Structures are given as structure tokens and as C-alpha cells.
Length: 87
Length: 87
Image (cartoon, rainbow over the protein chains, first blue to last red):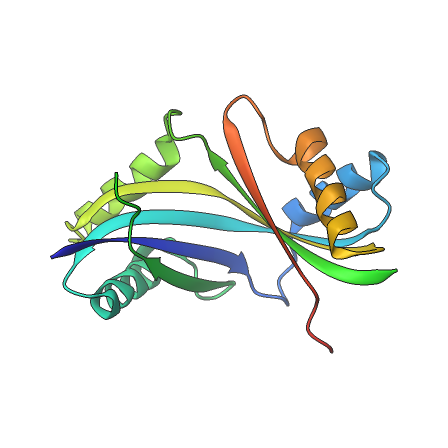
């Protein structure tokens, strides 16, 4: 078994309204950042795990997304797997 | 002026306790994902903006992080800038 680090980005689907993003955009406009046209806010989840291979790690993290990490009705997710930096 | 897309990841500093991450880890363990050793949860913010250049976009988004998007006491941030896909 080897150690892997999975980065999961869970973001609202493009058709879903994002009140948090709208609020951040309004805040940025109020601070003078008028060049901002859109803001979307999602979750960035970093998971340290053990797995036989990178492919196995990706499959397990995919299962985690389906079972806990994302709501498939309104959210998309992307997974990237890398090996941890030596400590 | 050109359009750019900035991806900002705001994450808790490694020394800061992450109750949301601990809760997600506990949930994953309860679902049988015993291979997970650590989970950290952060924010993933996508900003569409106009700027003269990629460097200018990066500088402006850096200002946004300092002024609104992150709490410098407990959070780190990383910025990546890319050009939007043609629609």
C-alpha cells in the first residue's frame, strides 16, 4: 500500500444559483474590484489515504464523492491524485 | 482588456484545527473508508475578471484575497490564472 493525496473540488453545477458567489461578488464590487464579472464558490477537499495504486485511489475517492462528499443533483466534482511530498 | 479566470484555493494553515475536515473524516470512516488518514476542507473560488495581462489579473486577485477572501491569521491561499475557454 502506498500513500496518496487526493484533491477533490466540489462545485455547484453551472445552472445552479450560487448565493455565496453572488455575495462575494457584491463584496468585491463594493471594495472597488469592478472588473469582476462572476464568482462561484465551491469546496476544496484534500484527502490523505492509502491505496494499492493511483488508479485504485482515484476509484475509492470517486466512491467517497458519490456516497458523502457531493450532492449529485446540484454539484459536480473533479478529482486529482498525487503522491505526497516526502517529509 | 482580456478576460481571465482565476482559481483561488483558500485553505486553513496546517497548524490550525479543522473541525469540518475531522467531521468528514469521521463520516468516511463510518462508511467504511478506513484507509483515509486525514481530511482538510477549504474553499475553491472561481473568479471571472478582466485585466490587461495575466500578471495584472494575478496581482488584482492577490489584492482580493488580502482584502476579502482569506483570513491571513489562519488561512493560506493559492492563485492560478487561466484564459477562459471560447464559448
